[in-house]
Amino acid sequence: MDHPRIVIFDTTLRDGEQSPGCSMNVSEKLHLAQQLDRLGVDVIEAGFPIASDGDFEAVQRIAATIRRPIIAGLARACTGDVDRAWQALQGAAHPRIHVFLATSDIHLKYKLRISREKCLEQARDAVRHAKLLCSDVEFSPEDATRTDVPFLCQVVEAVIAAGATTVNIPDTVGYTMPEEYGQLIQTLREKVAGIDKVTISTHCHNDLGLAVANSLAGVQNGARQVECTINGIGERAGNASLEEIVMAMRVRPDRYAYQTAVVSEHLYASSQMLSEITRVPVQPNKAITGRNAFAHEAGIHQDGMLKNPLTYEIMTPQSVGVPDSRLVLGKHSGRHALALRCEQLGHQFERRELDEVYRRFVVLADRIKKVQDSHLLELIQDVVSGAVGPDDVTGQNKKFPPTAVALPFPRAISAVAGANGNANSDDTHPAQISGSAGQEQARPGAAPANWFGRAPVPLADHHNEQEDYLWGV
Ligand code: KIV
Ligand code: ZN
Image (cartoon, rainbow, N blue to C red; front, side, top):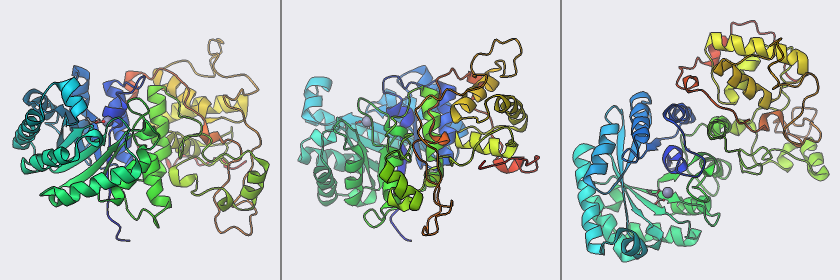
């Protein structure tokens, strides 16, 4: 397949982190950046270094630690910001300075109080300065979709001449419509000298629920980078959701014949990890990663799913890393199964840590029979924080019920289709009927600073453990 390659620019740690309730500390950002690296994103926008010392440190640590993707730091169009971003990016293997300046008349008049001429000059000067420091420079005309189009073309042409290598076209306020945004990208390609030498990028906000549709329209009209966030978090209604963009291309190559380097099987773990760190739950009906995304409750749907999952599922849960609901974790499960489920939930453990998680898991499983993901997440947090375990005989630990398990979400039946006697099916993925063990939300709980930043041990290292696990009870 020779489909055009789309660069996935993840801004969860910058634009996403700016959304209410989603702020993260340095260790949390580093931990998530490691997951984004595993996920296969091309660019990680690690923060806005001038904004705070914490942001500076986060960019600096991510730049020094994560070697494969490009690490971007945001800067307003002024020397001080650009220098600070560059300082934070010093250790990066592949640094990018991302300069932005608003270009719409509304922003120029009321926010910046500068003329169009001044705006043009400032944008050009900032990019020129950034280019002296770093070969990879992105420019974003903020509020591009409400900017006078001929003026936008003028600014874009000027920053390309000054050395920008990526030109991002933000729909900052989520105002544009798919055809309109596609047309704007097309117009830029027709009117701007030098545009064919740079990468055009989309950056769409979701105020009208169109961020993903607009981004895809941009791609169809020649954009080759998409800026997006895990779970679509971001200012106000959020940014375009990374998982939705990636899966739209993967599920509908007939319409969107593009490829990304994202390993879609890591999408669910990435979503869970973000939710766990920020303690902002994923909307249950969130496409791709919500707990209902692969759940079926209506009788007709259940019937169809049991006959053939293709009736009501357009992608397999496994393709996005949703744990298989048939795989029940109980007292007979072994380290391998436990390690795999932990990994699916975004936690990779060193050998000794896994031993401790396993020890507590066995005690818990003996007590509650079936260990749900929410219990496991709670147990993991207890282990990493050094809290007492479920075998605490003092009775201090009240987190786990002694016998019956109170599930945080309503469940109806649990059933399996596909591989389970579905003779007509050519697709053997399991159906998850009305919720699955793997679709639990992360429980809120403080994650201690020392939890983050460990070197994970690949699952393969556990293979010589006693593999006495029993899946699919
Ligand atoms: O939405 C926006 O305009 C931005 C820019 C800084 C790229 O986030
Ligand atoms: Zn934005």
